[in-house]
Amino acid sequence: MNKSLAGHAAKKTVLIVDDVPENLYVLQRILAVHYRVQIATNGRTAIKIALSPSQPDLILLDVMMPELDGYETCQLLKQQERTRDIPLLFVTAKSEVEDETKGFELGAADYLVKPISPPVVLSRVKTHLAMHDQRKLLADQVATRTAQLQARNQELEETHQEVIRQLGRASEYRDNETGLHIVRMSRYVRMLALKSGLSEPEADQMMQAAPMHDLGKIGIPDHILLKPGKLTPEEFAIIKTHPEIGYNIIGDQKSGLLHLGRTIALSHHEKWNGLGYPKGLKGEEIPLAGRLTAIGDVFDALTSSRPYKRGWTLDDAMGLILKESGEHFDPTLVPIFSSLREEVAKIMDQYQDKDEA
Image 1 (cartoon, rainbow, N blue to C red):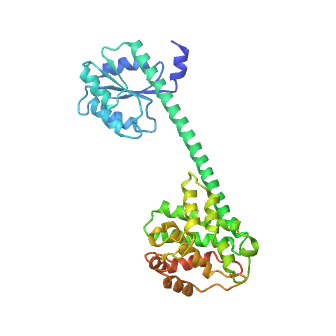
Image 2 (cartoon, rainbow, N blue to C red):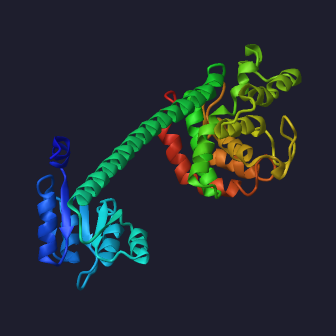
Image 3 (cartoon, rainbow, N blue to C red):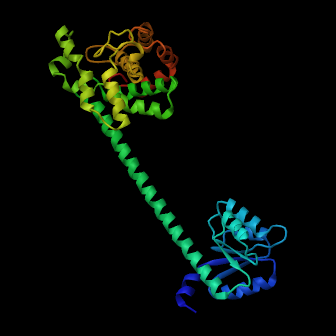
């Protein structure tokens, strides 16, 4: 017999299922030279063997059996995750087209019609084992490649988010803010967004985009941005250009995260009463992202200590937010933020500036 067949088949196991001893004997004699053979005389035993640790690589299944016939056995095997991919060949005297159609619909790989021919049996078994190996190899390759792509995508996403975080911090290197400002305010924004009805992914995206709110300060001259005293009307007019500068720096991007960051950069200084800047938007004309960020940004600015001021207490800052409800801030968001007092306090304590600790 062909050595390559023997070498290939030595590792394979074939389960023969038939309730007639003579049929089992004939098939066993044909296959035992090349394959490890398992025997079952009924469908239930076949299923038990197929689910065992030493499950077969291929099943030859008689159709006409008492209690559980071949079709029912096949159906049960195909319903089990551990056995559904095992190639199953019906061995039967039933050769009508409707019989074969039923078998193929149940998931059979092939039909062997009695009386069987040894060369045909060997050829079909070898072919279906080889096809099964190829499918398994392809599935393994696809799984491996998919895992590699997922890991790569995760790495790219983490890099993307880190670049965005660093963009957010870029403005702070020119201001009197600290890196913890964007950490705190972005967490306030996420918490408020979630409590306001946004989904978890939407709230997470808000947190990731919020640090870009003051990116435009990069374009403000130092003598204005860092001025310790009160700004002149002309100087404040220049400060008021930073939302549009940030908007233009980010640009028109395909990334949903960058698009959201651009919206926040442009709209976070708008006020509910229409007296904000740069567009003087009013009420719900202001994008929700801008309204959410405005509360988190102002609250953290109030409670943070700077060289020119002491930070407000949580209660005083909350009082100001409540007072400005319907004026500076969205009146539907303010009571939600106020209800999050305990969570806000935890964030303030966890991400406290060193000079305040």
